[in-house]
Amino acid sequence: MERGQVAPASCPTRPHRAGWGFRIGVGVLALGLFAGLSGYLRSLERAALSGGVSDDPDAGRTRTIARVRQMVGAMKLLTVELLTTVNYTAGDESWRGDVSATVEAPVKLHFGTDLARARVEWGAIGPATRVVRITAPVPERLATEVVGEAEAVNVSVGWLRFRSRAGEYYLGLARKGIYDAARRMTLSEKDAADVRELTRRKLADAARLMAPDEGLDFRIAFADE
Image 1 (tube, rainbow, N blue to C red):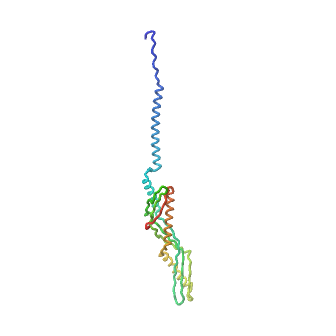
Image 2 (tube, rainbow, N blue to C red):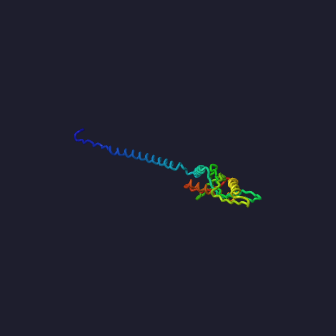
Image 3 (cartoon, rainbow, N blue to C red):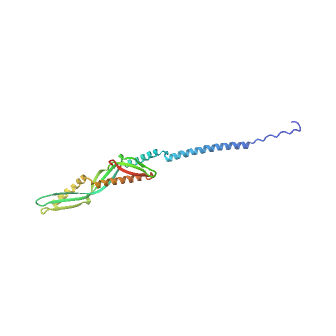
């Protein structure tokens, strides 16, 4: 360099500013990836918690009916009990005098409905009510139970008959006959209607207990209706 010349000033480099810019760029990119991944994971979590429920109303109704059908079938057999009475008289007529013995006792009739054969379907759908119709088999008698310890007896013997012999003999026949009479007895129209109504209410109550949060109104019908 010649004397008297001034050396040009060198342009200072800015390493710190360039370094910070690179770091900020990487940070923004990482933040974006994290936000996207977090959103994706949250969407998976919501789908898992909701069971993958879609907004399709038909799909939702199909799932609801399938769930109710499974719950109803799990009950298998729904039973109700009807309490009534039965009586039977045994006796004999003779010149020595007539003898008769009558026994009356309460009877428990047990009826059952096979829910494995029930049909579950939508009855009606409205803005405020969702009706599910359950069509069940007609209740059938399963068992007949005579409450012998609560029996009432009436023995009548003629003037040449003895209670200790003829009376007790025919009383034994009456006690035996009352069980056959109970098994053969047929229901009156009122009793048959009571059995249906008891079964209808019990099934509806059980369905509501099994699906308390479904907002469903259950209507019960029988196969012959």
